[in-house]
Image (cartoon, rainbow, N blue to C red):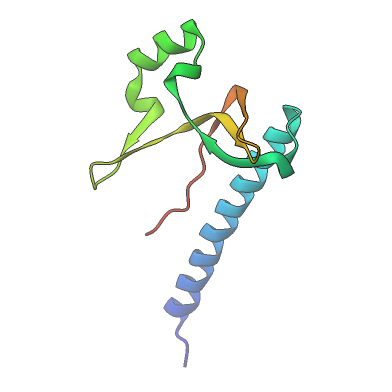
Length: 105
């Protein structure tokens, strides 16, 4: 028999999944708004070499706001500033888009 705590835990898991999926959908909407066809996008990325000079100065001053250090010691971007296309091409995102990750907790 399910307890009230089991039901709460299930609802919270579903709520987190819903929030993640809404964030992903919003990301794709922002890509479309930049004139990029979703079907052409193979991946998202961040590369400091793609930054404008002003963005580059901001990036170096506020590095921890752009790059997240994970408990494993690895890093991952907090923003995407380009998309890679299936044909190997790349399009700069302007403005940069907040990166979306599924949370494991």
